[in-house]
Amino acid sequence: MGRLLSGVVRYIAHYPIRTRGTFCGSLANADPASEWCLVAATLGARMVAKSARGTRTIAAADYFQGMMATALEPDELLAETRLPMPSPDTHFGFYEFNRRAGDFAMVMGLAAYRIEHGVIVDPRVGVGGVEAQPRRISEAEAALKGCAPASDVFRAAADIAAKTVEPIDNKPETAGYKRDLTRTAVQRALEAAEKSL
Ligand SMILES: Cc1cc2nc3c(=O)[nH]c(=O)nc-3n(C[C@H](O)[C@H](O)[C@H](O)COP(=O)(O)OP(=O)(O)OC[C@H]3O[C@@H](n4cnc5c(N)ncnc54)[C@H](O)[C@@H]3O)c2cc1C
Image 1 (cartoon, rainbow, N blue to C red):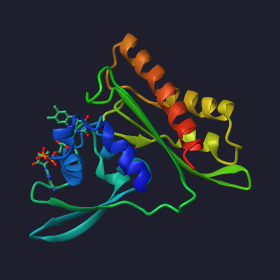
Image 2 (cartoon, helix red, strand yellow):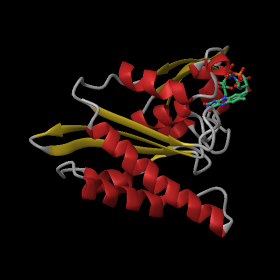
Image 3 (tube, rainbow, N blue to C red):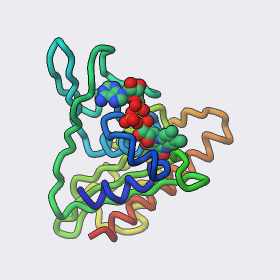
Image 4 (tube, rainbow, N blue to C red):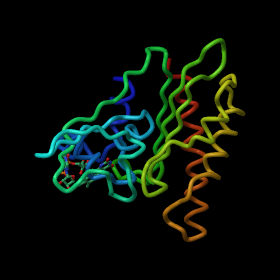
């Protein structure tokens, strides 16, 4: 997990910005191109919200509710984010595309899986920067599950991710470009994951 977080953080803006912004602040802001939001959505983080009324925990799948929108009520603070601790044999890969280093991502892919008896188990594939909120692409995960890691398997899952996403920018040329970037980001994240252990 430490390897994943320390790799991903380098893509957040420039040094002075990334050292001042906070993890919970990024999740409260819920920018669709936020790296920490993609990590939280893909790994299934749990958000702890506090107010004078009490404390509640919100699953990532319920927390992100659209473009810069979350399940937090106006009187709630995001007090903690709990990331699940993956087993040490988890492969992680992250890939981000933007035009200049430090810009917000145009598209990001995050992949995590384990290999048991030569095949992929517990695959997670997340995409950010394309739709109004980052999310797991369960169709791509299903295409990986039970397969031996190989470039054609990664390519098939990446193709599925590209077809599944609904880019927020709905001009035909932009949406098509975002789908192409999604394919590349997912494939490269999966390849990076394979080499990560
Ligand atoms: C030039 C520039 C480039 C950037 N590029 C990137 C990038 O590439 N990737 C990226 O992920 N981010 C990027 N950011 C955002 C930045 O990295 C911060 O992480 C992000 O804005 C959160 O900062 P913060 O923790 O200071 O929260 P703030 O900016 O202070 O707060 C953001 C919002 O969340 C609310 N808020 C903050 N904390 C909490 C909390 N605990 N509970 C409830 N509400 C809260 C605030 O009221 C506010 O509405 C960029 C910012 C700038 C200025």
